[in-house]
Length: 155
Image 1 (cartoon, rainbow, N blue to C red):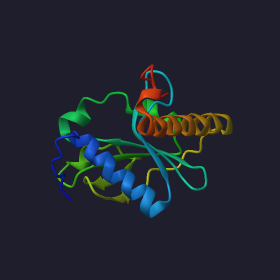
Image 2 (image 1 turned 90 degrees about the horizontal axis):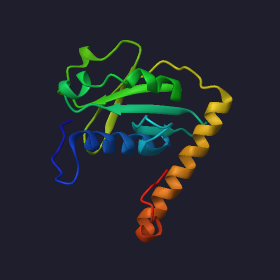
Image 3 (image 1 turned 180 degrees about the vertical axis):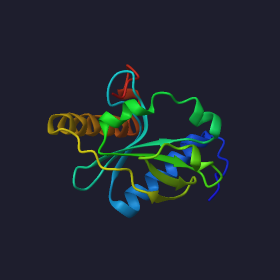
Image 4 (image 1 turned 60 degrees about the horizontal axis):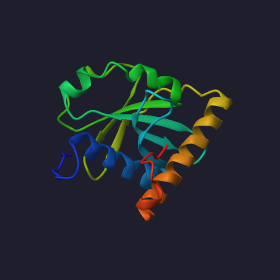
């Protein structure tokens, strides 16, 4: 798989698109890109599974992109499974042990290694699911009626 150029999207966004297509189509997940689980944190993809499982996927388009990311471990407290999504040319030996691996391009993805499961506490899961639903609904509303989101915030 290779990343095809799209003038409107950055390489990491193209990876995220392929990941979202795969998780929603092949696994029945609802997905949101650029999700904020709490102030100061933004994950590339948050996925909500059919059984309520929550996955976080960080998309890395290059070695430099990965090396400059010092915050990824803070995302582990916000998911049941954590994954890296990279293209087929990425040097996967750089990725930490004990994390999931997805190979993606702009159109699809494949899970090569499942991230270990670390179940979220019930209260955190419930709060995240509510935040996810609110965020997704606001994002949909902004697409349908851009003028309604006067403050520019999605949530």
